[in-house]
Image (cartoon, rainbow, N blue to C red):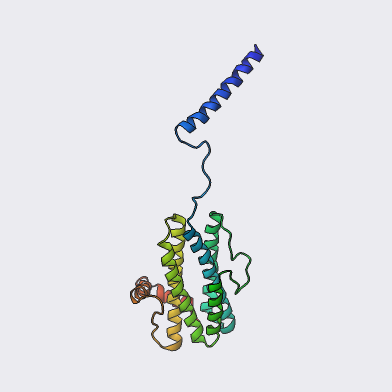
Length: 221
């Protein structure tokens, strides 16, 4: 009797498990929860790979110029750029993409265009304090343009949020460099790469929220 009862329990348990599997397939539901992230397009992957090294370029240039000119604006913003790199790195990891900046040295890049740009920016920024600050303006304007292009090319929520955060950071950095450069030279800084409307909106947004003045104090030389 005990053996018969055990056999029946075993048969019922097997039938119940089979019903779950068949039922899940019938209703189109996966038996196990999906844990993989959606596949990214080639453009999305290229954008993330470029941005991790572009943020590294900003960090590396500011570190080098801080060492040469000892300006707090470079020291503080280089730290912010490290946080930007960390943010991009987390998204790369979430999508199982190798980080090209993971073990690279300061001033070392896998992208040849960024390598050449880094060398040029260091040479320019080494000429004078004003030139160093102009390099900061150049980097942040370029960063903003690239981020605007990349965010328009993705529908992934995590990447969109990442780029939005980086845009906010670059806008703050641009205002800080502009403020420092205007105070250093007495000149009114004009945009180099951004169109006048976008540049004015960034500057006016800082004024409207009081961020430009706070940024100038935070990143004062």
